[in-house]
Amino acid sequence: MATHEKVDVVIVGAGASGATYAAVLAKAGKKVVLLESGPDWQLSDLISSDIWGRRVKPAGAPFVLEGKNPYGYAYQAGWGVGGAALHYFANFPRLLPNDFKIKSEHNRALDWPISYQDVAPYYDKVADDLGVSGDAKAEEIWRPAGKPYPMPPMKTFRNGDIWLKGFEAAGIRMVPAAVGMNSTEYKGRPACIYDGWCHVGCPIGALANPVVTYLADAKKANAEVRARSTVTRVLTNPQGTKVTGVEYYDDKKERQTQEASVVILAAWSGQNPRLMLNSATDKHPKGLANGSGLLGKYMMAHFASGTWAMFDEDVQNHMGTTGAQYMSYERYGKTSHKGTFGSTFIVAGTGQKTSDLGGYANARLDLFGPDLAAFMKRAARGLTRIGAFGEEMPNIENRIELASDKDEFGMPLGKIVHSFDQDAVALWNANFEEGLKVAKATGAKEVWSGRGNMPTIHLFGGTIMGTEAGNSVTNSYGQTHEIGNLYVAGPGIFPTEGASNPTYTIFALSLRGAEHLVAQWGSVAG
Ligand SMILES: Cc1cc2nc3c(=O)[nH]c(=O)nc-3n(C[C@H](O)[C@H](O)[C@H](O)COP(=O)(O)OP(=O)(O)OC[C@H]3O[C@@H](n4cnc5c(N)ncnc54)[C@H](O)[C@@H]3O)c2cc1C
Ligand code: SF4
Image (tube, rainbow, N blue to C red):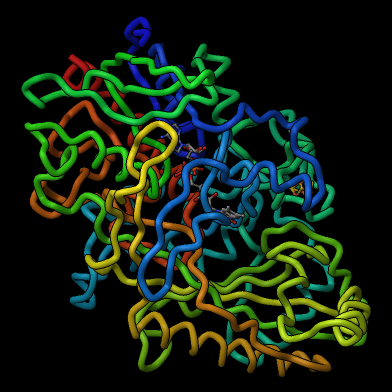
């Protein structure tokens, strides 16, 4: 086993959250090492093909899955430098003020220890750093005012515009979607060409993926990225009061130690609790920073209700991005749909391929042979869809534990236990019903709900933030209550998930946590 020279900060995972911490800390003059279990992807590795695109999807240790709605990690987790944001759709809605105070306002779920106003300045900073396109004024009908986005909205196409009549009939206001994509050239990165290949990674860098944004900044400031390096344990001092570094296996599968003054776990909400549970010692017998017993608890997922419509006209469905053209918070109130509880976030307009999960391949699972061929012919010009993301409330039974099976490094696999409750199912159904109403009002030739198994999208919780060690694992900066120089970053620290796609908030919270760490460096690392 080799031991490397001690550094200021070791970051586990080079995805959205890890990259943000790396940029801020390296620019502040800290010696930063990022350890990333997957390959060192470059833009030139991103090839616009669904077959080639599979190479950038998860290939690490699997999870054991249990519960009524097993969590679909294979489509959600990241793998390699850039993480899942190497090939995300970059819808960038933010959480709204009502997300932070569900317990106070409805006596349900949990409150965040901070409010929307604490995060708002970081949404504005991230928009400037990464490049966000959208119309802030238009979306301010639902949220407090902030700065304008640095780029105007993206172009729209018939596959998005054709839905507006239906939404209007249902009383749902739609505004240009906020997306982490370039509608114009931005900071030396080109404007989008609307060919809809974002889901396998944008080869020209128009998508705000970490490789061309925060990681590039971090590397310029001398951060070191060690790819194919899988962390298995966080190391602590004998008293259990501080972390001292991490143990990992390098690209030759040899065991190494990296000592550091501060450890930041940014390996996604699925892996961070697994690592902390596996780092148990006699001083932390239930896993690191787990005095509350809440480590690995309150895992949450989004679900989505998709509605399809077939038109006779050419809706240009080959054009656009994989993200959305229009969005709406009109049903974002927690009690918007009668008899259900939770927010809904609505999107419309997306470029589609004939293959893969997000394309037409999923539109009519009941068709085979000649019927499928006839459908695909019509779909190639006339098919389009909308989507409504729904919010699941935190439930302590939804959790991550260590399984008895082990990975190639001898580390126990993570087991995710996940079931949706009745509120989630009712909200899922209400959004299908409303989707059909909207679709019918467009005058489409045929409309139908995209029902299958209830999907699990994004993953939150497991290391939730709160006011104290008794009710949470971290504070609002991601710093663990029990070990001051151990931080957790990413969607795992959200105590509730809202219905908005998470990554704009992940970037904002990581920026906030990293700036706080720099400001408190002497007391945290000393
Ligand atoms: C197809 C797809 C579309 C999406 N679209 C959107 C969207 O439109 N809008 C949105 O907001 N979000 C979207 N997301 C979600 C978004 O990509 C994630 O929320 C975000 O990337 C999570 O960032 P993270 O830093 O927490 O984790 P990740 O991006 O998963 O990064 C974690 C990294 O840690 C590495 N790692 C894991 N374990 C270890 C270990 N033991 N040692 C070392 N490294 C390790 C992983 O390989 C990975 O690279 C999408 C995701 C997918 C897959
Ligand atoms: S649609 Fe735009 S952002 Fe997506 S892959 Fe193409 S150029 Fe990149």
